[in-house]
Amino acid sequence: MFRHRPSVLVIATAALMGAAPPVLDGPVPSRLAGRAFQDELQKTVPAAVWRNAELREVFRQFADDRRVAILLDRRLNPNRELSIEIAGKPVIEAVRELAHEVDAAVSVVGNTLYVGPPETAARLRTLVELRSGEFRRLTLELSRERRLELARSATVHWNDLETPRDIVGRITDRYGLEVENRDLIPHDLWASAVLPDADLREALTLVLAQFDFTFELHSDGRSMKIVPIPERVFVEKTYRPRRESAAEALARWPRELPGLEVARDGSGLAVRGTVEQHERLEELLGLRRTPPPARGAAEPLPVRKRTFTIKQRATPAALIATLEASGIQIEYDRDELAAAGIDLSKPIDLDVEGADADEFFRAWCAPLGLDYEIDGLRVRLVPKK
Image (tube, rainbow, N blue to C red; front, side, top):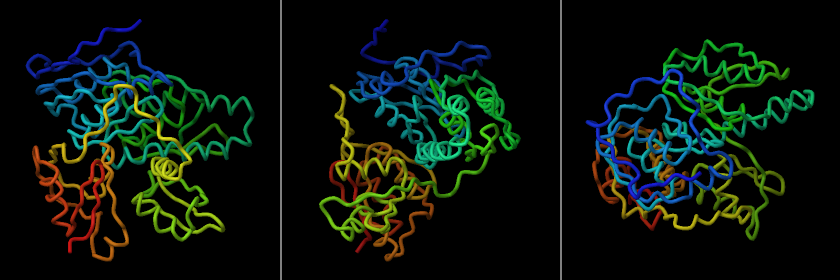
């Protein structure tokens, strides 16, 4: 059965909403999964308007209307008020724009839209992929039955005021796993959420990453431990350059995809990067087709047609992750910036509201000794001359 969607998705005001009482025994929300979920992300949002609406309620109403699972990171302020209008954009871009309003970023993990700090969002899919590699290596010694048990998916749901320690316990109990140090998870009370058709890797990653933790499965396939997320997370793959020499690729690939690490590996090139960086490299090399936008889906707004509001102390690297999550492509040469003494890990203070593109980029580039060039969705950062 299809629900009629009005031309205006929702209009909410603080006065009308009030504080919703906690739901302690609610039903599992209906959320899309698989192909239906992916298709929904590309459908156009006709119009959405919020006025002085709290963050948690905005995303809850949006998730209910589109039937997509949205998980808000515990570190976001759920009571922060939003006033925003969105129209003519795909669902995924609308969620990214909402996240941008609260200095957050979005990552699609399985059938869930995670919204949280840009540094965490940028690492989630890579953490899931790393756990997948470990599973493939470790489960070779396990029985076929145990391998199937660890690979199955199920919907994970919790209600308001449940603790993350109990949520992790419920997930691991389902897979018959003992956690040797579950007490590492701090006490907290969470709002309700659902992870549709999530496997063990996805569910645990989405919960534990909110405390900067991940996990390691022991070789017996029956126990695991919680460990800190490494400072650098990456997947390594080897590629053979096509239509260019290894030396040309060695110079071009990191320039085209900042943050990518490339080194010679015999007749090929060993590349270290996030899952998203590998996907973009494969598109660049013609190894992966960029899916066409859904009919009626709007392209991301060019940089010069956007306005920016950011009031926080942040590192340029974190800011770049936020901008890239909104569809802006930031390009720079790491060696060139390093030679000019420019440090992208040094925090800067930003206080801009409703700024146009030039005002915004001047505000954060000038203190670093950077200049910028804007071309459509691309922004090239260069040392100021």
